Length: 100
Length: 180
Image (cartoon, rainbow over all chains, first blue to last red; front, side, top):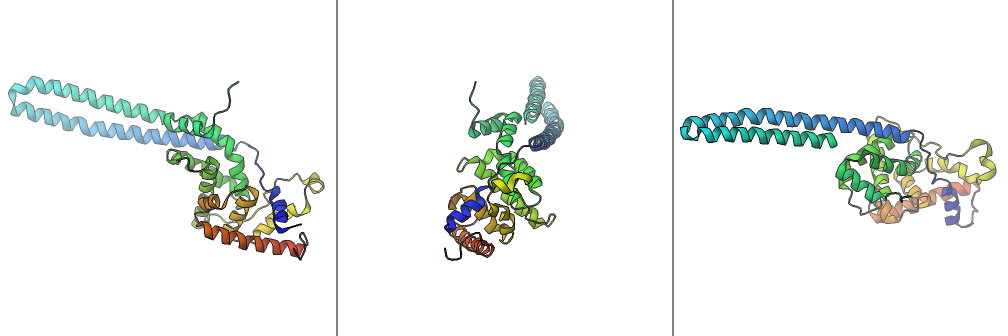
């Protein structure tokens, strides 16, 4: 028997597929935990972002209303639009994190 | 009846839509090879295999398809195992990974197969992995280089050294002739 043949014979049985004895289920449980953790992190990030953005934008609108009185109506409209956009962005982020 | 989805299609589903079922299919399809490979290298094969699939899940978007998905997984598995050994939290032990049915195996399997874990125990980790990938899994030198992170030339020299050592052991055991 040649060296190569001897080695091939030695390793022939080494390429044995292992039967799934619940391994896949364990992995998927850990994957699910990972997904939940990601969702929580993204959701928290969205909430923090909204909490920071809304007061800051409100401040800008107030300043604008004082500085340019005739722009009051415009600024109210702008504020409403801003709140709408921020809420939409937060909802979008939450929906992404829910899918992830 | 619909044909089963290919690895590439399943990966696309996981990456695009976070499809957990698609990832489950990938795990189901490849767990045998990954665990089989690791069982020849470490006693903590299943722990390392779990970390491998979690790591693959995190990095799936980075899989470019340059190699087969199974090769990519084996490369992650090998790195995870080395990291685990480096951290020193686990002891590296070669275990008898051959799942041979004890009562009937001696009649059906060549005698020298039983000696594989002992033979491999004589080799350093990199040589053991290279030899396994080459002879048990039929990997090319470049694929072994991809898995181990070694240059192709180094892989060749490690394989030659490992072969020489194994053959020496086999000659001592009388499983190959002295004058081959």
